[in-house]
Amino acid sequence: MIPNHFLDGGIIGISILAHEIFHLNISWFLVVLNIPFVIMGYKKMGITFAVQVIIAVALLAIFINVLSFDIVTKDKILIAIFGGFLMGLGVGFVIKGGGVIDGFEVVAHYTNKKLGLSTGEIVLFVNSIIFLLAAFNFGIEAAMYSILTYFTAVKASDYVVDGFEEYTALTIVSEKHDEVKAIIVKDFKKAISVYKGERGYLPKSFDVKHDCDIVMTIATRLEVHRLKEAISEVDAKAFFYVSRIKEVTGGVVKKRGHH
Image 1 (tube, rainbow, N blue to C red):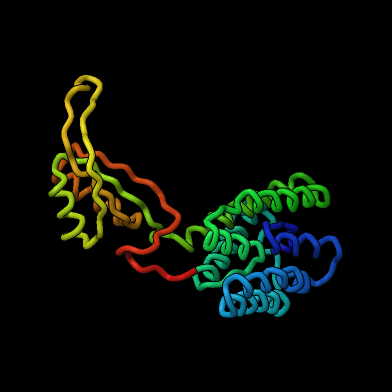
Image 2 (image 1 turned 180 degrees about the vertical axis):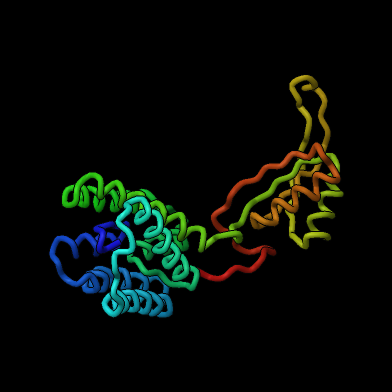
């Protein structure tokens, strides 16, 4: 990405941009710009987290100097897609290991964990400034390709962090709710929550209704498909509601790696 003047978002993007403008070693920018966020990580999340961030940033800065990077291709689409994918892959592994490699990720990590607030608007605002500066210095086309690179990196990073282990809430409304409970708990070894409700109220039979148990469970994406198939064999008319969830705390769920 650097030899082809492609940017990413966050501190890495700012470092590449500063490197292109001032022609100084990019490692210095990576280290200096991350210092305030290392301090923030230490104060908010402890010494272990701060040390992990320092190690990750230091290794990145060192290897950028130690290794030589030749231009593999000049095809801008390939650079944007594979550059973003490989960067996202690396960032994702660092996050999954419990650290971060970009200062803005510390802010996101802190707000999501401590306050339950999304920093999407802040990150988008900062990255918009980065890409505007890229457009000013390298042209509109370079900025547009950098946005594509950033988007690819974010998607790759998210998939590494969550992957098939991303939690999903599966809600089932079925007349055979007892059988549904047995399948989920006994066959799949999953915990459930049960809401007392009613089913029916169809357009052509609005007055027809029945009491039922509405069953909800937390599963991974792979498990959801298997659960739906097993429940459909018992009740082909069962109603499913699947929703993505960002975090699960407490209860009985499959343990995941800390990140």
